[in-house]
Every structure is written in structure tokens, then in C-alpha cells.
Length: 234
Image (tube, rainbow, N blue to C red; front, side, top):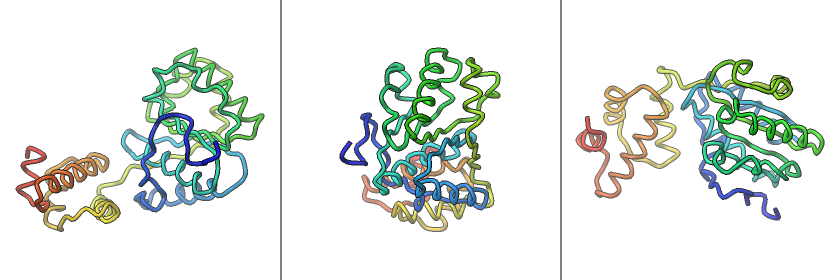
């Protein structure tokens, strides 16, 4: 791959995903600092980023990929929710890269074929000095879902990090951050209404904010409380 941003697979990265565009709550400062150091390092790393559903792991994995590209490193982005139906052959011949970033690792655990393929990939990467960066969603204990003892042993030796979800007391700050980064024009009253009448889950709030921005643009209107009610069916 002459172009470090050219991925092996036909999966588009979110080009806006970066450490600077990731809202770093107080609970995640050490995590982001550590990841920044890892991306800048020439050392080989084996990392698992765990966290509850919708905590932002997929965005962070893509941010890591984009940061690796800026460092002229060769990498592969492997979103398992799209790859899982393509067959285990997808893992072949990847170990020559600088890094492999696999999103949603939990989707292939408990599958004997996929576990064998992953085990082989880990061994190949260790031999070729290729870094492995995984995201792992909340699931049962790894001991319960992983069938191959050797794979379980390999995984447990990796560096585990936990991505914390945005807490209630930082939601307003987080939405201000996102709307500013995405250049979404929304006033304080409308943000307050959104927070009061919608779920307190950050990922869904961001999704709704994007929907409101698209709807406002298509109607050539500002984001107002009536528009919020109309778009989100409140």
C-alpha cells in the first residue's frame, strides 16, 4: 500500500474521526493520552479497548486509524459487523502491516473457525511486529465466550483499557463540543430542550443532533424547538 490511508478493505473510515474530534470526558483523559502515545510510538502494541455499547469505541477505533495514517503507517480497519459474513480468509496476509484495527471483536468470539483464524493472526503479527488494536463491547466473561484456551491466553496478555461512557453531568458540555466540531448551529434553549426530552445516552443524542442538522438544511430552517418536535416525533 503506497498510500498509508488506502485501506485493504472497502470500508470507509469516518474522516472526521480523530483524537481532537473525540469528546474526552474527565473519565477518559488517561485513556486518550495513552492512545496518543501508542500511535506516535514505533513500538509494537497489543491493545483491547473495552466499554459498554455506544460508548464511542467505533469512533475511537476509526480515530486511531486516521491518526496512524497521519503518521504514514500502514494499517487495516476491520469492522467485524461488516466483515463477519465475508469469511475467515479476510484475516490472511495482513501481518505485514504496521497495525490492524479490529472493531467489535466480541462478534467473532464463540465461533471456532473465527477464533482459530484470530489466533493465527495474533501469532503472525507477533512474528512480523505488527500492532493489534481491538475494540470489545460489553459481553459475557471472556472465559465463558472464548472456546479456544490458547486464544484466551493470548487475549488476556494484551493491554486492556476501558472507555467510559459520557456521564450525565458532562452531557451538555459534550453536545456543545460535538455541535461546535460539526459546525451545527443550535442555540442553548434548543440544546436544553433536547437534553430534557430525549434519552440521556450520548451516542443517541449525537445521532439526533445530526438528524436535526440534516433536516434543518433540507428545509432551509434553523434548528428550533418546533423543528425538534417535528423531526424526533416528540
